[in-house]
Amino acid sequence: MKLSKKRAGLILVVVAGLSAAALGLRSYFQPAAPDAMLTARVAVGNVEQTVLATGTLKPVKLVAVGAQASGRVVSMKVRLGQKVATGELIAEIDPINQQNALRKAEASLENIRAQRLEKVATLALARATLGRAQLTLAQRATSRAEFDSAEATVKQTEAQIAALDAQILSGVVAVEDARANLGYTRVTAPIDGTVLAIVTQEGQTVNATQTAPTMVVLGQVDVMTVRAEISEADVVRAKPGQPVYFTILGDPDHRYHAKLESIDPAPESVKTDSSFSTSSSSSSSSSSSSSSSSSAIYYYGVFNVQNPDGRLRTYMTAQVRIVLGDAKGVLTVPSAALHRSAAGYTVDVVEPNGTVSTRPVEVGLDNKSVAEIRSGLKVGERVVTGRKDSTQPAFRGPPRPF
Image (cartoon, rainbow, N blue to C red; front, side):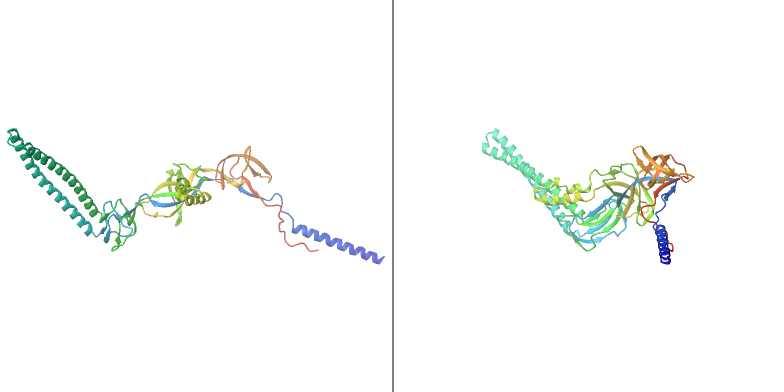
């Protein structure tokens, strides 16, 4: 009997221990409350829907000033960052060869002109001889052969003068070419601009036989052009005339505003399209076309911005935003609170008594972060933006003691 009571007591102790352990484990792995929610209040704010693009800043005019004459650079008249006007002297090339070429052309031209003067005098004599032969022929004092010879001499001399006239015209062109080549030894600025780079140094020899070597690079930096890369997913929404603004990496808080002027009709990869390749280069063009098709496609959007203080510099990176639409002073909620269905948009609203109700709303602009609410909500109401995951055990502390 005593053994049976002891066994029964032991069983009760074991059952009590198991119950306590079960309660402790339940408390430890108790799921989160099903009504645990993430909420946000309806507020008045601004909503802006934009397309993000990355651009590069360039001067509105960028010119590589080259040399058209060969020779040694005897002087460089500009320095880096200097502003120059159209026609201002940039550099001088040793002109001795060009001066000699001009002298030879002028001497050749004078020689031809002297020959023409000689032929003019010969023509006058030939015409006088022909006149006398014509008179004596009428009087039968001269033979017909002498008359024909005098007439042929006149025509021959006239032809020689015509040939010399053509040579004189060619000589004039040669002189003008030589004078122009001499002028090319003085390299001048083709536009008003700022010296952005000096490629050729003083004392260096340049050879302009096949290509024009670059002396300096000029740019008009008072107006900068931005070429922004717009992805193919966003280019269908971007249109010329839309407002844009951008920031630079060194000053992300300052916005520069402009308007989108144009969008290129094709990406840059169209230049390497295999459709334009020849039979000899079809394989290389085909490989380049296939590589470009596998990469991202971007279309360039172009716009200009004033730069009076020179703060924007050449080849800076611009973080561009093309404004598709904006709304100011409107009701806003986080975009995560919206639920879309065939009937429209709805939101879950936390009522004052703590219950949650679903309410239809009219949505305006939505930039996937903040959405404009045109009707259906009031300022200060709370909307559900998310719920805590009830499938994961919530930590409630250590298990209770047995």
